[in-house]
Image (cartoon, rainbow, N blue to C red; front, side):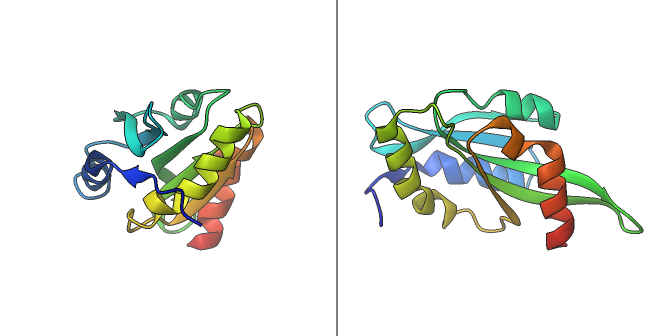
Length: 138
């Protein structure tokens, strides 16, 4: 099911900057005010994981990508590009539905995602949760 929401080209440009040029370590995407396309909300560099998570709003859905860095025993530091579908429980129902049906439009264009995280509250996006997934997907 597709919502007909377009992906703004800047989303892919910023993603390439994160993935290939390591210019950012996270990007947060949102729906435009007219709800017709997915746009970049914010892109940041060198943000610690908890700082990145704090940028996800309590009452509005977001998509996000984070270049998750972790230590793997015997293999040193690893990176996994992680895709987040953040739909907090207290977001509006219409927003939740639109976000659910628009996710694939963005997700399919972001080549190289290693981990996907669905979050409705802070406990589902804690670093330990992502770390477990990262280690399992290695």
